[in-house]
Every structure is written in structure tokens, then in C-alpha cells.
Length: 427
Image (cartoon, rainbow, N blue to C red; front, top):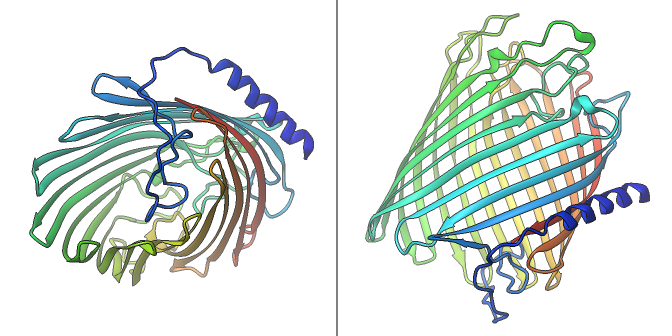
């Protein structure tokens, strides 16, 4: 293991030496005292350690590069005949935020190249571009919108990963997303009307041994969502609301082996609250009912309890506990199954050991229950991390991640351990 860490350190030093481009820096932050009440450990401002960005007219630009050296003991996410490898990830991203007094515009782009030491068929290049903005029509009315495009690689352990034992490479796909929303306030009454759009386009996957590629076109689909939320400010720090959502999921093709019409329509109705309790907790919770109905009569409807939560508990000024929970109806490629319901819970603890040293621990559990077949997966994840902020421009992170999937379907079980060291450099 010491050789793994040594390799990661050598790569990190190389990127540090390379990243010496002269730029004009924005006004430096002062080491003034910052009120960190009601702000989580990872989100709070740290004068002296936060990147200040580069002034570019009416925008502030934040560039960043990173290098990660990691060891993974099960890169194919298999139950037997596991394969380990050392992975080097070279990353770069940039974001730009407007400095306008009214309206807002944010732009971003990123790229990540993963290089496997012994299994170069697993090498992958992911990238993304996007932006979002807001138009302030009046003090109480605004329109927000976003657009993004990404070229991504599906993880070998993903629920719908194709061709386990047959695919020579992981599946690549593109994702186009857009959203728009209108927000308006009537005194204490709040409203939001919006819509989202997603377009998934999967590439065929090369087969082991050079045979015919594994067809993935039948997974291509579009997802449309429309929602309306009406809320009421019980107090300046608490809003209660009711939200209705409808969706349409449309596939381009039918599966090649077992023709199925996986098009579906769904809806959800929930009541919830967003709150901020001074020096104690903040976040949001909701509960309700959701349903997804499929066009193919052989695919059963999925319905049940809808819920979600994301709550930060400020145990002390130096310790934050975040609790998260969610239920959702997801798509599947399993023959005979209409989809699956994912119920998940997670807990994260962050502790500021020193002003520039942050300790983190996290754990989560998810149950994926497939409708129409007997498959059921339990997925457990856990991790530890140490962040060391060297200064405004450099930081180190040492992390460990554990993943375990326990399935009642043969050959779907797996466990994986990964440990890695990351160096980030930003302005």
C-alpha cells in the first residue's frame, strides 16, 4: 500500500510543478472573523484558504486542476475472479460566476481522464459543459433556467450495467439536460412552476473477444417533468409547501430480445417543509405518494410512499451531521421488470479538527426492489476522508471508500475497496 501512496504523491508533485501559469488574481480575502452559524463544516467560508478567483470583466472565474492516484481491488465489480488496478485520474474544471447586482449567470466546464495501469480497456474520458442563470423580473418574481451536456461512462457496478462478463469496456453515454422555472411570491405565499428535460443516448459496448458489439440503443430515452409548488412562510425561517409533479418517459426503441414498450407516465404529490433553526439545524423534508404507469400491459405499475430529506444538524460549531433519505422510481433493462423502487438513507459527519484540516465519515444504505421480477439488491457504502488545506491554491485529500452489493440474483453480488490521494490546485 505504501507504493500506491508514493505513486500518488509523485503524480501530485508533478501537477503542482506544472501548474504555475501567471494570472491576475482578484482582491484577496482578509482573515476577518466569519459568522459560521447555520453553515455546515464543508460549506462555510474559510478566509485564507478559499480560492478567490480571477476577475474577468463582470465575472469571477475559478479554474482548478487535480490529480488522483487510487487503488481499487475490484475494478469490474464482480463477485468472483476480482481484478485490482491502480488508477490515475487527471481532472480540470472551470466555473465563472457573474458579479451583477441584478440577474445572475453561471458557466462551468470540466474534464476527467482516468488511466488504468494494467487494464487500459477501462480507460475513460468524461467531460461536461453547462450553465444556469436567473432573470429578476421584479423583487418578488424571477425566471431561472439551466442547460448542460455531458459525455459520461457508466460505472461497472451500476444497476443497469450491461454485459457483465461479456462487455470488454464500460458503457459510454451522453446526457443532455435542461430546466426552467418561474418563482413568484405573494406576501407569505410562495409559488414555483417549472419543467425539466433529460435525453440519454447510450453507445454500443464492445464485446469480449471481438464479437458483435452489445446493443445499447434500446436504452436511449427522453424524460420530461413538470411541477407546481405552492408554499407558505410560517415564519421567516420556515416554509411549508405542497407540490405536484408529472413526468413522461419516452424510449427511442424496443429491446432487441424481448420487445417491450417501456414508455411510461408518472406523478407524485408531496407535502414538505424547508426550515432553518438557528444554531441547531436546517434543511428540508417531504412525504407523499408517487406512481409510474407503463404503456406495455405486461409491465406492472409501480406506486408507493414518496419521501425525501436533507437535514444538517449543527452538533457543535466544529461538527456537522447531515442526514439524507429519498425514494424514487428508476428505469431498468431487466426483462420482465417495469422498473425498480430505490429507497435510500445516508449519514455524513464532518469535523473541523483544525481550521485547515477536515475529517469526514459517511455511510449509506439503499434497497433496490424490482417490480415484476424477484430481483432485490441491498447496496451499502461507507467512506472516510481527511482534507488538508495547504493555502488558498492547494489542498490534499486522502480518502477510502467501501461498496457492497448483496443481491438475490446470481453473480450480482460484489464488494470493492478503494483508497486514493488527491491533490487540487486552484485560483
